[in-house]
Length: 173
Image (cartoon, rainbow, N blue to C red):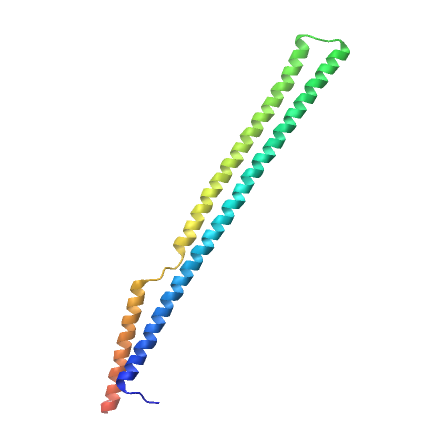
């Protein structure tokens, strides 16, 4: 099938231009999909880390309640034992003070451990945010300059096809 030089040149240009536009659109869609996936992953990470923070706080509260119950039980045991033995005074007070100090130390340790765990989770949230931004930034971005260059190349290709067809038509090739 033979085409006149103008039609052949225009067809060559059209095919090249359509390929450039299709590549641009594919890059734009890939960039959008990467961004959406990164944002969804970020949201999932943030939700999971928030749940872990809540779980850490709940676990800490349960442990502190157990420390309080243990303290009350031990103080009661000391008082009951002292009362049964007919002992009173400073030695009983010292035993109760030791139980109370130990419970206080356990509560403080639990508080400190929970604080560190929640701080670590906060750092993980920030890291998750940085990872999401990195994924978004690394997504291929469609290049308008590449599109223009592709269409320019298609224009040259169309012109070359036209020139070749003209040369064949003239018989000078």
